[in-house]
Length: 306
Image (cartoon, rainbow, N blue to C red; front, side, top):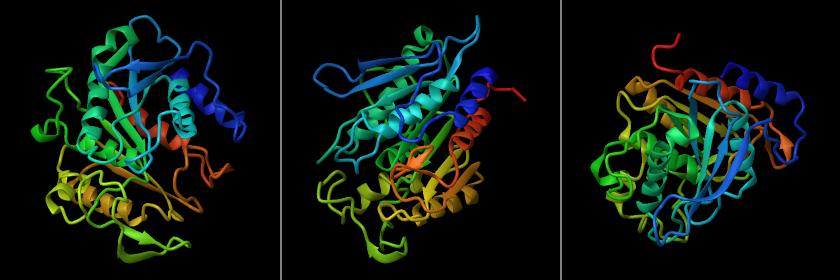
């Protein structure tokens, strides 16, 4: 793992902004893998790192794309950059699709949890340590990543088919500018200033009507915060006009109150949909690859490791 991390950090100096992400020698991608059963068109891609040394197992991360819960695809450039970064650092990365559009909730969340379960069923084949799995996502995917991490074992939000008896629990969450509370999301001005006007999910009724208080509460990660949920890294730009920065700030405050380990990194000058390196085809003020990899290295380390 240390050598893989060293390679990933070396790549910081040689990657070209806007270039197609390059996998490390020995790493590979398997695309269009079915994981949701008959009748479902959604698939996932598997990014496998260079094979670990004999007797060693790799940690893993499930990546969830964004798109306002109504659009988006795992083919996004952001997913490729992030999953390549993870694979080059020694992680097995799953880049997953899920149900989109009207009435998608809660199937969208259950699909993501089934991706975690599916990963565990393939652990031996992919040489994954099933005890060292994290989840990450951007925008709508950030929201779903938080929900995966915070609602493990909640009966009404666990799949009841495909992988019975297989856990959907994860040990770490990376939330990139996701909505943490559907009830308090606000509109944002062009300069990043937050108004007091409520911002609904959008024209597509993913969660039901905006006045469906019970559904909005159930689907809001902040309502599931409690001691013992996974450590969380939040990455958010201070010029985000799609999801107000206050969503991550309020989440951080709630995690602190519950005693949950967390980090909030506010990226100067960045808006919505950035990856680990860039936003709007320009470099971020701070390269986030070392931040994300250090967080995962810390929280997905083998239990008992110092």
